[in-house]
Length: 189
Image (cartoon, rainbow, N blue to C red; front, side):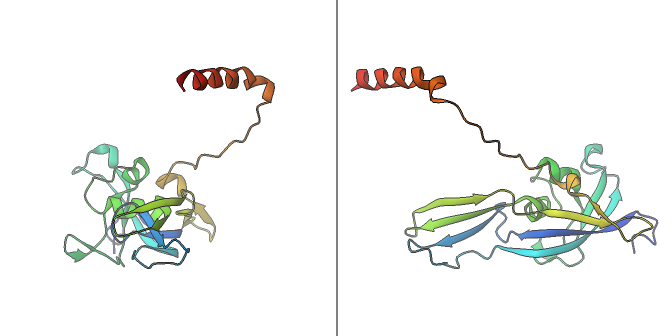
């Protein structure tokens, strides 16, 4: 319909799409002390989810948020009392501006939520034991114009994941620091 009105529109597919039911920007899993799943969260991760993007000028949010906007014709959650999603600015999603209207937190979580595992000791005590910051929002894609090729638009939604760099320091490089720390510890006792 939007294309018929002359509004640029494209289909987007998000792989490993988070469904953050409680809008806390994480996908939470709870286990007991034996590691058994407690089924306390309605959050989930879908293999993929599809929505549309349309190109709008955002006078309501300011020109910073002009450009591609997420519109989901098949929303799974109510927004302001009805089933709707968007238009959420992809720029807002990328910048983490989750306090804006039009379902920005939900879309942000769909592409960038952390998957967190908690041990629940009691109703009042839980401890985070694992967090995966890279699982959600993979290969966010659209179809190329004029061909059947995939165009990766992940960079429109999120910054590149930080790569961990491992390095080694020889003992001789920090040996004197250890001796200084030991002196401080002995003096304090």
